[in-house]
Length: 575
Image (cartoon, rainbow, N blue to C red; front, side):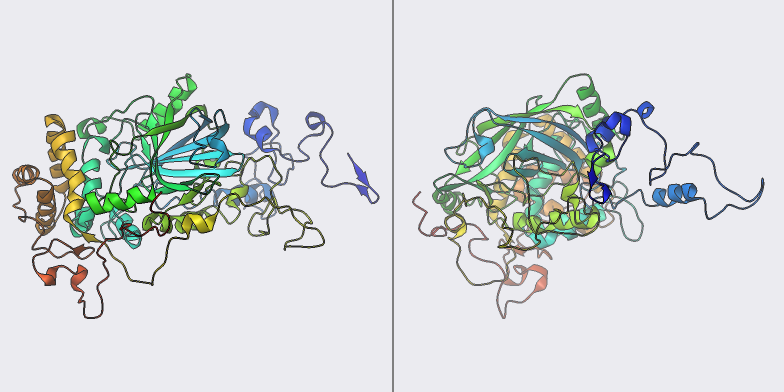
């Protein structure tokens, strides 16, 4: 025990933890201790003889309010749950390490991408739409998030197992997720009533690419180990000279990919993926993934739109790998199961705005909205000081400091250091390493209202999947998956519209769906009006504007549909 001039120091550590006990509880000691090495106490550290005892009046009288042990037990039990994630509620996680095998320092200034650099990682896999008790083998995209604890701070890669998503307009996201949840009246999920699901898709046809992936073989991956991960969003990599390129991150499974059919999914445990991952790591069969990037220059991004109508800011489009091949950076391996699921998986948080020097966001509007939404969710769900939790805290070779103070459950509250920029006790700073003006300064324009429109190019990649990627067996399974899912849709009009959308992909696909469902679909989308998307393929002007809006004032779509047209990157397009 250490002393001050006024007596014992109440906050000093014991010189010998084993003999003097937990004067300070240590996270790693608590995480790894065995029950045999711990003493039963109340939350304020008072030893108790038995956890089941209560205080009461006489041998058959009422309980006593003074029984703190019972009140302590029950009141904490009543508050054990935190709000589950609105999206990605069901998931699994593990720890491991990342190593850079192929340096990226020619195009990225991030320290972690120097050859041989390593860092610990935590990965969380998840389904998207279901609640925390839902089935691991649901037909659903999978979340694939990685926390890289680098020497420059945490970098969170918040990805999915599909390279595209259902939308490209950020305001649609809450609406879409509502359709993946339970019906507000019947409280049924999409397994029993798919009406909301297909209603949304049939009114927002840009979802077709993701629908093709979801209803195909990749819709139910065989656990977490046998699937790839994709950033989906376009990012920017900035090198030490301030030059930058657009990039997409890929995480390629070294185990390969496998899928489960719709029929076989019903034979699996609800926690199939969790059990598979945990058991594999326990027996030393550590899963690993390659980390790779696609890159393109600003000039190439403009040309990709002008010549091929592929929009790098569009979450429903993909970059052709023949034109923009993958470049491996490194690999990560999961070799440690969590000791406590709640502390290390339920409370772990991932944030796409957690980027390190050398990695910057692009103008992808859905990415831009996620930069706000994710940390906002964490502050609500876990608490304003969520990054002080050990599983979320950075592990950097310098003492962190800032001017964030207090809030609920503040633990590292930075002592007596000034909570403002003080000249009396000045804080240290590191020199700027990224020229933000050069990286983001090419944007200029007026504020506009924007909503994307469906166009012929949006069907090119889905058509390639159907005609060139799927084999005969995959096509048959696709038709069975879609028609089976549609069987619980209560409105035939919705199915007719969706088949009309599928017809823009392939007449063969639409005809086979009509036969499987017994519903004759529309001949295409030229005569349809959508409530969620402008119809750039409409024959009649009255059908072009979403939701029947008139364009007497202005129309909220643009000629480039939000893409980087020629001349977007002023002053740097020649690079």
